[in-house]
Length: 125
Image (cartoon, rainbow, N blue to C red; front, side):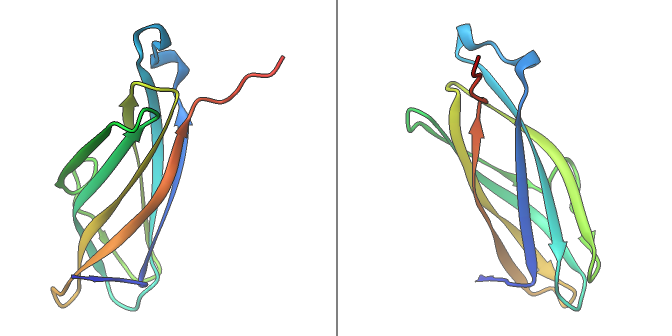
């Protein structure tokens, strides 16, 4: 499987204080992913793989079909955006991974999801 420059992935993460319980080592984050098709033919996202690492170095792997219950088709010049979440035991962590996709001819390719931070904002008084 090859990496593809035809698809770009951008991620923004957000700490969800209302659902977190720091006293119980529970930190909840939402992340919004934007997948853009920069190529000249449609693509489809088939599956995802995430490596979630907490601040203590503990790793959790998550993989499965599609994203948020969908296997989206993305037309040339189009994008697909979704929001999901992660729960870790520390106020700081990272996520990274990849999507396995196919092009309009059915050729499989992989799109890397660059590492991004899950971080509780620092409050300064």
